[in-house]
Length: 178
Image (tube, rainbow, N blue to C red; front, side, top):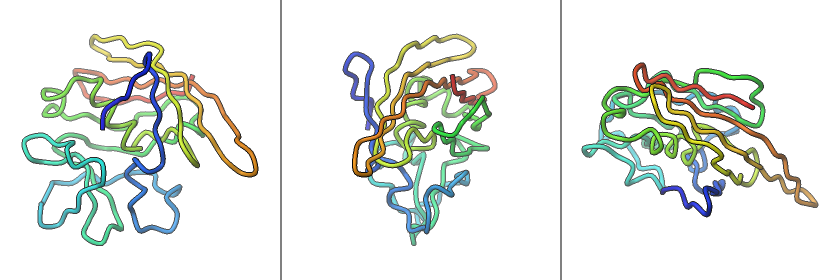
């Protein structure tokens, strides 16, 4: 999966995020994803993320019975799932480890966070995002305008704005509502 830009716009749907394949009671209760070392014998690929790996190690996988998802601690740590719909203010979402910062540009790391659902952009169906600004430097920052959709008897749209920052020296990931 990569961004499918049309003038810096893209859509993220519920069939593409990590929690879609989990066998859990309520995916809305997922507040964090455990970071651990990858062991191939204990892992099941997350559909759509089979090719998101570095040197043969995936960034994201399920345990054998698909009751938990894990992120490779070699690449990301202290990771929490950020719900942008309810976020008011900013929070530290985790840390990008040096191995990942050396391998991938910050834009690709943010793609992974958004497309995987580790930064949750919608509650029900899908979200449409538009990249408004991308600034690189010691702090890589991306600002977005977004809209998430809920369907009851009618389509309900909810607009919001957010920012994701990665400190390229410490690896700190900060997510903020705007």
